Length: 125
Image (tube, rainbow, N blue to C red; front, top):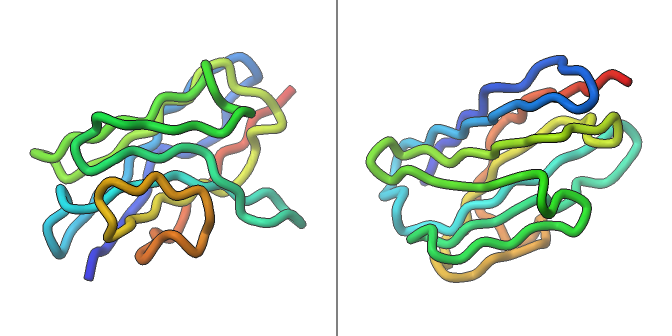
């Protein structure tokens, strides 16, 4: 079992930046691939970014490629999402998730086994 807690969300103006953190506890964090998803009001949860257990492989949704960066610090049991050039369309609740397959960069909600509670990101125009 892995427990995930997101933080770092907030209100930011368009063009600004935020860094989300996801702290993991429980079973060995380094053995999991990790992902970030987001869900806007009235919409389905969608994939944002994923990173393999070693950090050597990363994958991004087209909508955030070049603006967002996913990273992880296994010593700190934390995964990050650096978000730059934020747009109002990025407004959503952001969730981190853990996948027990360490090399699989899943893009579906069903690919992931554990989820955090989410953190709100609001981008004003």
